[in-house]
Image (cartoon, rainbow, N blue to C red):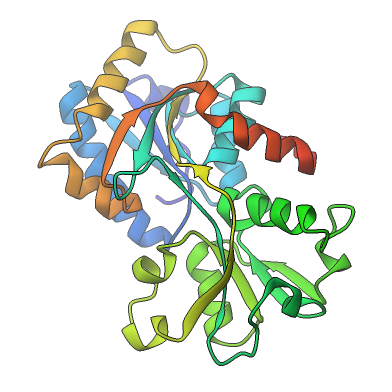
Length: 278
C-alpha cells in the first residue's frame, strides 16, 4: 500500500526500499514494484517497497531505520546523511551525465521573458526539501538579489508548494501560477500531450546539481551494504536499464561518494535547512 510502512517483523524477512515521490504515486508504485522484484532476485532477498507520501517521509524512515535502502534526491540525501548517517552508494546517470539543473518554466504566451519579469507574480515550487524544485532555484534568486532574507514573498506576490513536479507544470499550464520550477526534462517526461509541452518554455537555469541516487541506512551489515551496491550497479544491463528508466527516467547508475554532494551541502547551509521532524 502506498505510504504504508512495513512492521519490524516484516522488515526482518528482507530489506525495505523507499522511493521519494516525484510523480503520480500510482505510477511510482507500479515502477517501483517492478524494480524491487528485480533487485530482490539479484540479492536473493525479499525487497519490500515503501512509496513515501513526501520527501520528509523518506528521511524519517531512514532516521528511524524502518527502511534500509532509499532512492533520494540530493538535498534529501544531505539531510539524511546529517541526521541519520545515511550513506550514498550510487548516483543516477541521465544522458551520460551525473548532474542536472533546475529551470524556471513559464508559458510562451505569458509575457514573462526574464526572472526580473516575475517580480510581483506567482510561482509554484515542489517541496521545501526538493533540490531542483526549491533549493537551487531559491539560491539562484538570492544570489541574484531578487529574494531577500530567504523569503520568496520579498519578490513574488505568492509562492506555493505543489508537492510534485508534474503538479508544478500543471499549475503553470492551467495558469494557476505565472512560473514553476522543475528539472529540465520534466515537461518531456511528465506532460503527455505534445501540444501542452509546446506551450512551455524556460527563462532561467541554475548551476549544475549532482544527480539523485540511492543510499542505505546506518547500521546495515557491511557485507549486505556491499551486496546492495553491487546489485544496484548490476542494473546497468539490458534487463535493469528499462526498469530504471520507468522509475525515475534514469539511464544508468554509477558509484557515488559522499563528497559528490558537497555543493548541495553549501546550498543547504545558505538556506539554513534542517532535517524535517515528524
